[in-house]
Image 1: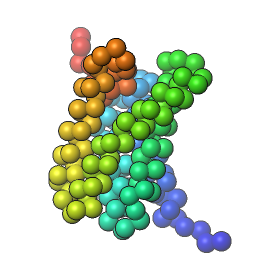
Image 2: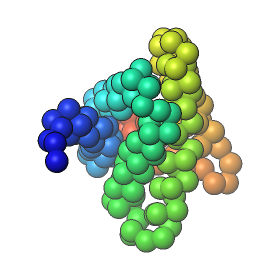
Image 3: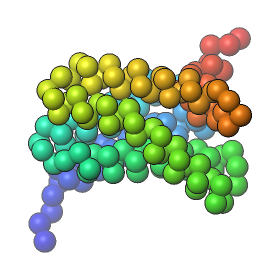
Length: 151
């Protein structure tokens, strides 16, 4: 059995994103982590796509990361039960869409468009989430920043 330090380092880098997002959700004093929370995850996606490890592996990593974020953050709001699990799964699937756009453009060697598309699609999903009867804006990044700048 060969010890792979690079693989363990990549796993640690992947865990930075949900950890940063959970810290922002728990305490508003960590609001600045929002601005760097997706960098490790996008970096790993970039590495996986450039090294031809595959779209499916990066999608699985993204789903797991977002699931960890939502599930751990929901623990602070509602009791962990089937509802929290279902909400976390739905949110993970919904928020994997920006990463699909990112990975598609990275695969086509258009990195700037992948980053721009990621931001636009993420913000569009957050806006759509605030509409309608089933609005769930609790963990939107805009909502997390709203309490920081209000006096």
